[in-house]
Length: 591
Image: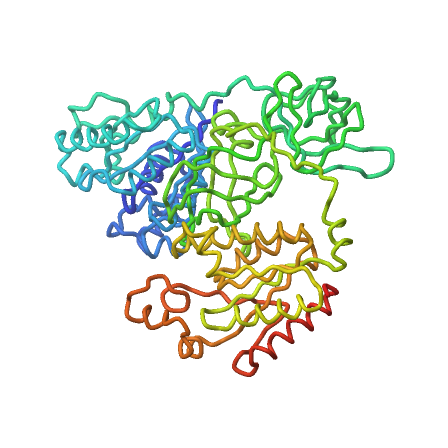
């Protein structure tokens, strides 16, 4: 039978788990031992005075039962004579929005619940937007707990009209509104006499009749996950068919190479064809270079390849998305660098221009969920912080590096020394600029080619358009990191004196240059000492509230964990500190 995947979503305590439990119960889909366990659990931890608490059928975590809320996504399988179903009960609480996104990512339809007494809430709107964002086009609005509003037709119609007005801007093909009481089973499976004024479908009737997400006739797509080479006589590409049907002898394209499928290998023998969802090993007719993350596509209709996109983003972390900050994106079987141009806060949704640091095979999310979606990871913690859906490439990937005759090695030979970035970080007043100036003075006397990028000086020119918000600080360091990398390419020893409060941006600066071309110097001065020095009077202004977002006062500073050099300025004077830096540079072979 046909399978329908759907989710239940909505605000906290709107009755999602109760609805699914009631649906299973009313459909006679519970075994006797399940009913016995439900009766015992309802007496022990139920919320209905010993009567059957259907939410307990779905809320399996101890914390969920204690608090009466859904935390994790709970999946349940059931079937009727008309159709098979997989339902995802998703959390309503705002802090668990990421779990709701997970449940919705594979759904064909959505059951969006709301409490008839409360109407359309902010979380109702957020979940509706996410459902639309993820390409779900069929929605039923379950106006629940109508028993607590005396089954009022006026209440139902008012709530339905309010949601329809809001949802008009969303790309839903169908919105069906059903008056119900999940607790009492009204209009869940069978029609109820308590709502004689309603002549639409019950929830189960809607689920049995709604059209699942259309399965387009797509060209073949095969994602390479592993190059399979057990011995010198066999080389295959192991992975999964993402779309269409891959056939033996089919002409396929991989990047800019065209070849054909010689074999489709499985543990049970070779296949003539492999449909979408199959995990197989493909042997190509030609020796084509391929690696993890590459995609084989039908030669007449291959997937696109690009690095810049318009994408829809859902941000899932309490630390907001900062424009220009370097994150990681996992798309297909590949992990690439990721930056965005707009700021997003926790649970915000937005359309943004995003950049990957390498071209990737892609299709729009509406065409192919696997090649059109990605997750965003924090570079340092590897935590999942966001999710994205590709709309389209901003332009073909036609920007390539130009090969130049005079390269870095030629400049190194001319200068007579290796280049590097000497990155001094620390609080305002720590002495970074003074130490950097002394180091450059000594290097210049030795005949080294140097340049000093100082935070205050750069703020007068290149970064004069930036303020001091976290987003501006990220962009400030991103620009300087790029400039410093260009100067290293020019063969210079570049001294960078910036507070640079965030580890992520200092890590970005390190990644932009080669191995042993970055020396992080932590000018370690306690806040109390830096504030006592206060050469510019900035700490006094910050304490008086005249200077917002000042590092160390109302904006954080993240000290380096493993700097190449740590300077304790409570024990070292500027000249002694500069000597320590110079010794380290000599040890690195820079000078």
